[in-house]
Length: 168
Image (cartoon, rainbow, N blue to C red; front, side, top):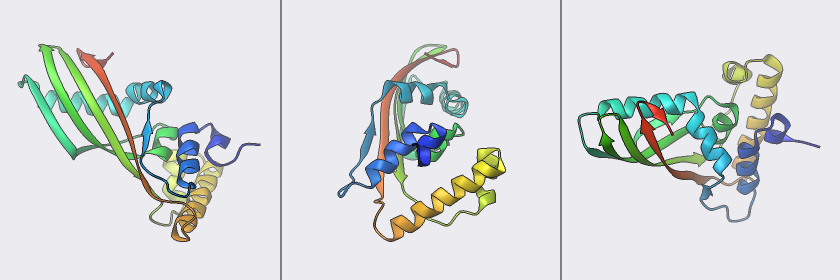
């Protein structure tokens, strides 16, 4: 039987929740290539990378300190797993339309405030899903307050090549 994130095939969200139940939950480093590819293909991620590259297009290389930029994911699993990620990024220009990029995305896995059903309505795109999402979130909120769920840092590091605004 599937519960929580796995009920909606939110595998990353389910893994992170499982990790938060460990006695000494420490930083969780995402290394799964399928998850990394999901991030690379995410429309909001691609838009954010193009926005950052366009800001620095006259430079040969640049470095963004962790937290100077952030991204909010809309993909359901990414949204419920890492939602708003801080960005650390180093990019080098190969030529006028090609960049090598090394990136770290970082977020705190936590449940910090009570959610009302309508908080998730636009993210879940359905009333039943938003009711379930807000209920599960609020159970996690209470569990964190009681010390059952532990707060910890989540990070993913990867590199990619960007050519003419397309992530390769």
